[in-house]
Length: 476
Image (tube, rainbow, N blue to C red; front, side, top):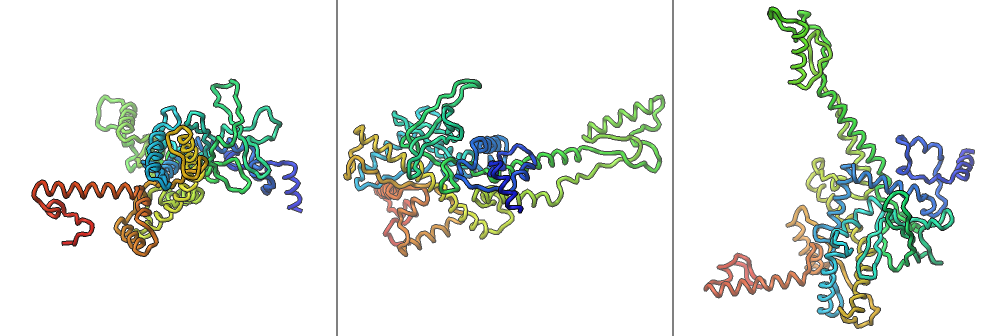
């Protein structure tokens, strides 16, 4: 009978898939009223528009006011994009074409939005961060060759459409044909402009959890309330500990029965006023509060936080790390509980998780953006057409930022063993460290040439000038 009653409640109230993070009740007591949560519709309909916007709003608020959230987002953003960003390497058969295309990209990447607010590295960082707080980001390809970032809360249903409509249109195969994009409101009560934009002009980096899902949800959604509760608990605990640390109570009577603040052998003085003045001076000097002046005093030993508080907070942080998909030690920058070997294993796991995010960014945003720009440059005559024709996609691969290893010597030795075994190439190893192998070779050649010229000009040998053994030379 219980399944039937639960199904009846679901049919009468379709909000069975309500998000925890979108509920306003602090203790989430409403959860019991929804019964078992059946999700029998597409994800975009199971999660209502209001719930999706509330989840985004909650995650953004945590980004502004939560140290835990800010640390997680900045850590992910910094390691995915790094200081130099994810850089392209053109890999067509024409070396001159590759150099020209890369030069045009670097010039365009100085101001991709045309607004002067950010370069491409900063824009990539915003994309990586948006997956956590917004569920992703869209880029609108403008006619002038610039891009405009579109946050998911601007992709909303058309107000003129029937109730329950989606902010996108799909074809028979489920591919999005157009997006409904709202302009930013300039103020309350102002008219909202709505534009239906062809999907070919919009690149989307959206996080999905179901195959038929189109609209995104923030990756912090499952743990947003956990972070909120942790922040509130920590704030209340700090306040309680502060009160306990500055309060003293006079609660025991001394052996003489006299107040410790009463002056003795002071002729002509008012004992009560002197006692009060002494108590106030005591409070000012110690920061304690005198509750009773009649008896001995002692400070209250702060009992907050308890000895289990640290372990409790770590457990909750580990739950948050699981939701984000990255090791707790990596996000918290805390390696004291483990050994050196466990720290290396943690960094290896973090590297794999970061590589997945970088791959997602390349596939959804960077590669389509590269192909769109190179096609424009070919049409404008800035680049010659590729051998396959005007519509041939420009081949490209992306160089990730360097990921620093804990044990550099061990990493280099392992890489060299893989090269000798034929499992990797030197080009792969250079890309692994955020460098271009061809550029490294040219720099190395210039250094060797300069070394030999300087040695000959001064009547020295290469060995006299530098302790570096040249390639192919015998080691001393």
